[in-house]
Length: 118
Image (cartoon, rainbow, N blue to C red; front, side):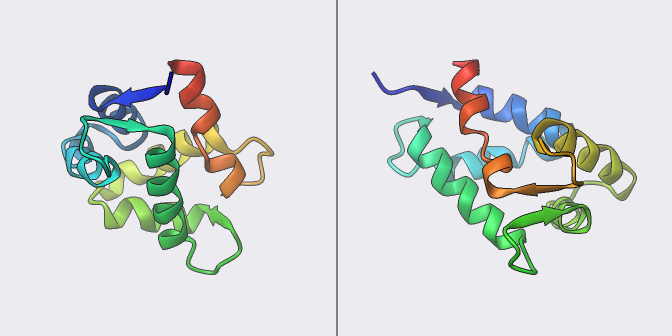
């Protein structure tokens, strides 16, 4: 059986990582990630959407999102400037497993964390 992540779980995760102001916008992101429009994002859809987003914000092409790249990502998503340091810190705490203040694709891939939540 395929493990699937319902829209509500993605919205809650988005609220934690980005703050409530951006969580509403995640419904649109969910619609994009849900490629087959079945109301769920399976792991393949999740990974594809995650990778596209990752590459969009990896502006120097080093396969890692630095603190400034993360800040730029959240700024472009409308996170209030006062909240950006907290949001960047929350993301680094969640995904920066080698604690080098950047998130590589393998660190940033939430697949294993999502699987443990299902």
